[in-house]
Image (cartoon, rainbow over all chains, first blue to last red; front, side, top):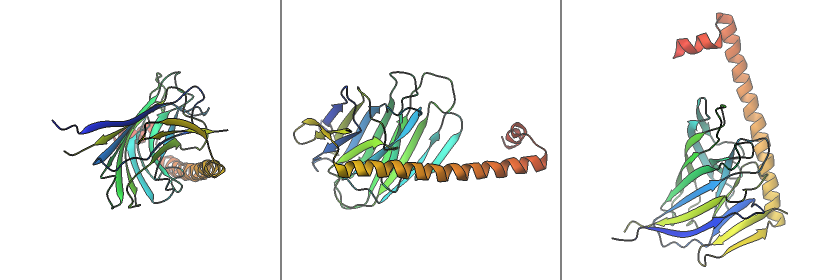
Length: 179
Length: 71
């Protein structure tokens, strides 16, 4: 059986936290990419927080559609906050949520090495051990990135531009081959 | 000083480096964009909520009654 699912690289945030996580020098040898990450932000005053996805360092050309639930009502969002500087792709658990809980996210990028615009799908859920509304959320999202270059780097960072990913936040990048 | 984790996918090497001045400027721009967009969207939501509340008042309905009618 062909080895179609390969761990390219992984990372665990250390005790000092990290304001962003960057996978660089991604080879073009796979068909698709899948980024799986479990993160918690440190910024006080937030139970959940959007996470900016930036590819190839490009800060324009993103369009985002997100649908899900904020824990009370259905939510549909187009181009959430700050989308002009990068895409908001997924949501993470943050400082005001139950201690030691993390948001879980998957980003799938088909044909990342192709020469067309890139379509990206996202799946995220926040975690909070509390019944209060707005504190456990889930979203599915779609991102269009109009840059036609092959994706060689992926960056994730808190959308507010403040705070860090806390210790034990993890990120795993997989390469998916079609044969 | 904010730092970032860089994972080189060719070598597997993970390094923690301080953000450059340019990256810090981008982070600050992100924060400003977030705040500006949030204010605009919050204002839009507040305006929509006011319109809804005014309509309900004219109809003589509570929010729960309106929800029940629309469910």
